[in-house]
Image (cartoon, rainbow, N blue to C red; front, side):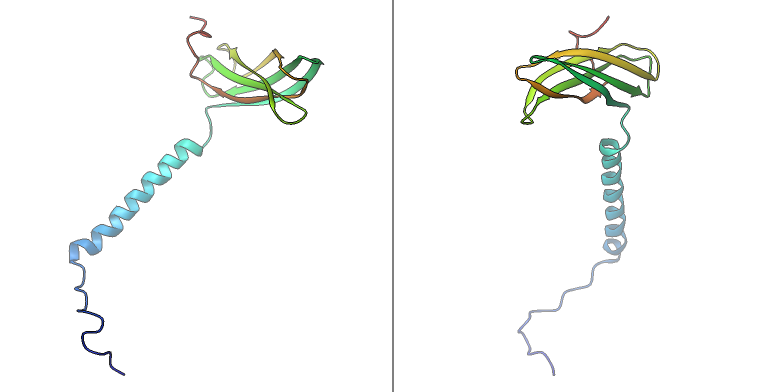
Length: 136
């Protein structure tokens, strides 16, 4: 059965030769850029921290001990630690300076809280130490 004339408009012209090879090249380049950006943002972190222990000292404070593993041991690191109350709310937060040293360093800090703490944890670490924490 033949299609009725004029019903679907004129047939499209084929793509020019330059477009047939350049579109896949552009798609591959865009994919490579997206993969690179994803790796930079989601790949391995230069500073990693994990909580090794915490102890609730009283109704207003918790002691947190954590381990910091870094790629560049000659740089200081700032870590944010926080306490959570029993209902999951953040009850306290503090920045802790970890001075230059070994690849793996341990730090302990006491965190004052606004509520009864239930847990203490490390939120994250960075090489971008604020000036007010700097040792220089």
